[in-house]
Length: 200
Length: 200
Picture 1 (tube, rainbow over the protein chains, first blue to last red):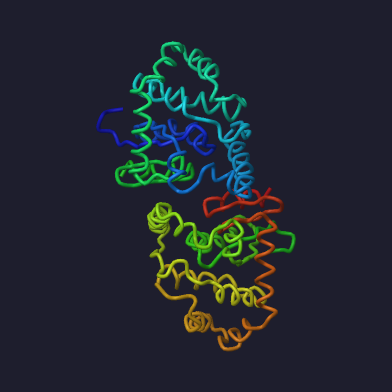
Picture 2 (spheres, helix red, strand yellow):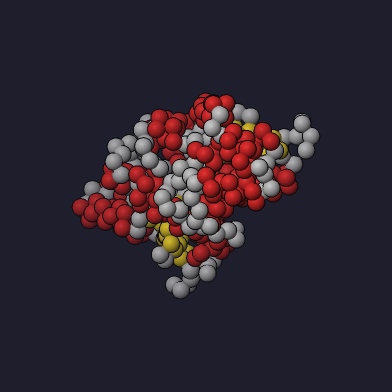
C-alpha cells in the first residue's frame, strides 16, 4: 500500500477479549478497503487505574463478566473462531506487548499478534509465560532468544510506556479502539465504521 | 403476527442514548424478520445502584461520556436521526416509563416510546415534565388527562418496580438489552444478532 493510502490506528491490549476478535479480522477488512493498519499494542491497566479500577471491569462487575463470556462465545462461533476465557483472567500482557513493539519495528507484529491471541483465547496458553512467547516466535521462524533479550532493554520498556501514554492522550479508555485522524472508535463493533471513515 | 411467531423482548430505559437508537429501528427490523417485539421499559437507576454507581457511567467516567456523544452523533447521522445530549443528562425517566406501561396495556407503547425518544434526543424537550408527556399523548390522539392520572396509581408504580426487578433477574445490566429465550444481548449493536437468534 502506498504511503498516501488511508490509514487506521488499531489500539489493542493483549489481555482483552474483544481485541482478539478485532485482531483476527482487521487485516482482511482493511486490505479489502484499501486502508493501511498501524498496529498499536498498549496496556489498559494504567488507563483503568486512572478511572479508579484496579482490575478488569469484567471482574469488578461479575454480571457484566458473565455476559461478556457468552457474547464472546456467540461472536466467536459466528466467525469460526475458538474462544474460552483464560485462567487467570485477565492474563498479564506486559511481556507480549513489549515483544509486539519489537515486531512493529521489524515488520512481524501482525502475525505475532494473531498468534498470541490464538494461544491465549483458543489454546488456553499462558501468555505471561516466556516459554509460550518463545514458542510463538519460533513458529514464526524468528530468533526468539534475541527478541526476548530485547524486551528487557529500557528502550523497549519506555516505548511501551510512551505508547500507553499516547493512547490516553487520544482519549482511549478501552480496547480495542480505532483512531482515524481525530475520530476515535471503541470496540470491535466499530471496525467497519472506522474503516469507512478512513476511506472518506 | 401469530401468537406462535418468534419473539424478542426489547428492554429499554428512556434516559438511555443507545436505547433511542434501538427504539427507532427495532419495529422495522423485527417486522422484516417476522419477529414479534415485546416492549419492556425499565429503570436503570436501581440496577446501576446495585453495581455501586449513583449516576450514569457516562457522567462517572467523563472520557467515556465524551466518547459516547461523538459515537451517538456518528451513528445518528448514519441513520438519518437527530441527536443532541439532553440537559440535564440523564433525564429523569420515571414518569415516561410509567406512562409506557399504560401504553403496553392499551396497545400504543411503540409509537409513544419513539415519540418520547424523539422529544428527548432530537427536540431537546424535558421528558420529566408532565406537560411534555401530555403533549406527546395528545399528538397520538390519546386522552392525556386520563392516562397521566393512571400513573399515580399504586398498580402502575408497582408494575414498573416489578418490571425493573425482572430485568435484574434476567441479568440485564445496561440498556438497550434484548432477550430471546435464555439469551441476553446488550446494546443496539446486537439487535441484528438477537433477531437472528429469535428466528432459529
